Length: 287
Image 1 (cartoon, rainbow, N blue to C red):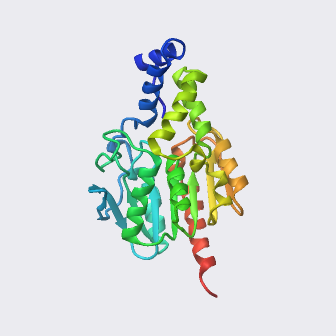
Image 2 (cartoon, rainbow, N blue to C red):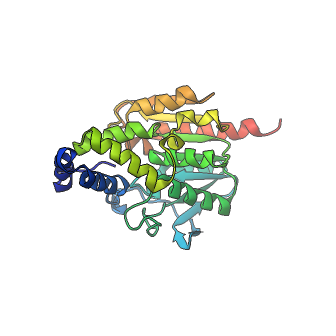
Image 3 (spheres, rainbow, N blue to C red):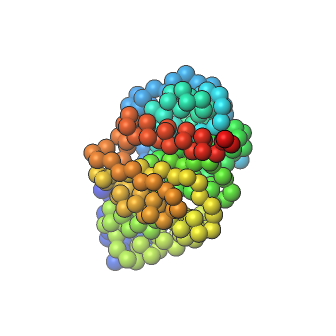
């Protein structure tokens, strides 16, 4: 959701005044287009695990597992892949947990989803997560990054009941994301309004269905750790604060200087996340 300045952006800027319907179509395509994948050689190698492919609507998703015990699911963000969260694997396995990571449709090593190559949406990603959970069992925890946090929240809204959540640089309000996206495109109110309607038509759900802070009003939320960096330029720290402020009992950990992705490799963040998950597990066990 970070379009580069390009011919398309210039057309959208021009179309705001002269051809809004064309501009809205281009903006909608850009909204649903996944950015180029992160090359594997730029990511930390995952420790050896066991391949565990999962079927979703006739397509085979890439998934991998490590360890034994209660399952913890790692959920990547928009344009991400499972390797990004590889730093969490060894500490979680050492804590006696089973770790499952997967690549969502049109991401990483998984095939294109129902939206076609380089495209998907939160409901389809949440369907993928539910398919993986159906294969491996009720989550002890879910650790999710960026839009993966929105995917996890959407799955919770749909009935998933993890015993704890760790949300790393989460996006709280999709309309905030929309505003940021429209500014990057150089578009104005006509394109924004058209894009807002087009997204609803495409996914078949209102924007409010993806508003994370309000989730607790209709659905029980588990103990949650929210981690956000003060210098995150992709998803502003106000998103994390909004979730932590709204959800009962949620804890906010604010970091400095890690940005949007480096917190996934930070030893302090990883330690806090693993401790939170194991503490939540202990709290639920009978004395």
